[in-house]
Image: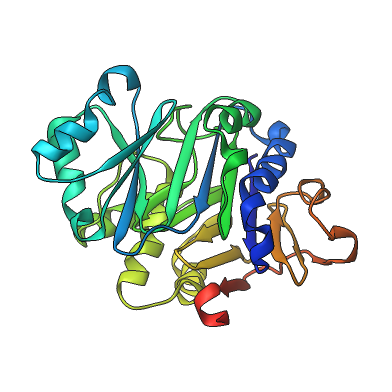
Length: 301
């Protein structure tokens, strides 16, 4: 049993409040998953820039002088430290190099997410503590997703927490269990994907990354997941401009959605949505089994 939340803003006036609204939603889901929590915030960045969020078990050592060491490696970077995580802003043209460079100069760090828009923060602990540790409430943005985990099939670790990110500006949160993830992982490895954990949810994220790399948009990739993924699942997925939801054909995992002129929201339970502005007049519904729901800022523009 895990808790999922997501918020896709249509109204730019709400963008400064994204982190605050998502934090309240996530904390409300604490009893669905007290082991670990995570949140992904999609916000703007300067043209030509990209961001890489990294995590360290020893931030005092790993983050000290990181900007200078990156400069020695030929990458100009601005580093913002947030507890056990650091957000590195670099030229977007260097994004393809940063993983190998970090593996050499900071081998004990792990990349949580990267891209032009997304920042991902996740750790062991209660949602309220994770939100406070990373000052999520102060963050603005266009959309975001969050997860609070009750581990059932793998260890409680930072890497095992959600969201999982396997491609630039892509991430996924999952409630459920996949039955064919081992076979699918082997297929994806043959296609060149790499994995940090044995978690089935990371396989789902990698599947979507691989499908979008073939030219599909998020909605099309989620449609393919209904045929290619076996098991019980509710997914909420973010891309640079998109937000998608899908449930498996049996749809035994709880889910509720709400939409107004200002936002689209998702929660594992309705109580995650009750403090959103205008919720009393929102269209509220339970997402249908085997049905893809997909919104995209670029397509709406």
